[in-house]
Amino acid sequence: MSRVNQTITSDDPHRIGNCLPACVASLLNRPLDEVPHFAEEGLILGDTLADGVGHGTAWWAMLLGYMAANGYAPIELDHVDQGEPGEYLFVAGPSPRGVMHQVLYRDGALWHDPHPSGDGLAEVREVLAWRPRRWDHRPSEPPAPPAPEPEQPGEPEGVPDA
Image (cartoon, rainbow, N blue to C red):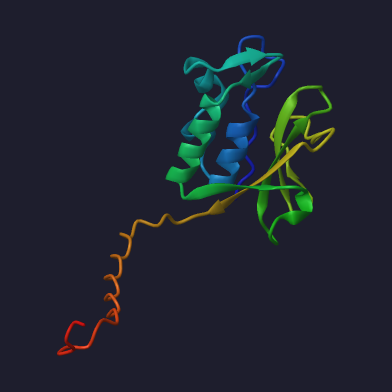
């Protein structure tokens, strides 16, 4: 896995920082230009921007789809120490610069901050593990045939009516 640095930071007056795509590129070991800029694409699809942060769900839906196409599904964790040994965790929170930021942790410690400063986070607010996933596409089992009806006791044959 390579450490990919972000190329757009929060001090760019016309762009949203691309720390999240840099973390995705690092996890998937691919060049940054092969990963969507989820926050900016989200704006095109109706998300809003406030204080340099995209708000809405379009960016998240795009991220989920992109990661699923690459065989990963998210697992939310409560703490950076809950990752499996050697697992890379996506950790979000405010940076020392006062903006929301995404970094990667491994084995409970900061492994990569894609920002040029490398300062990490001032506070951890969200921890996600993107774990390999396979999807079940098997048809369901056919239902079992119904059990036969138990015989009801009746009058014995050949008994005359009274």
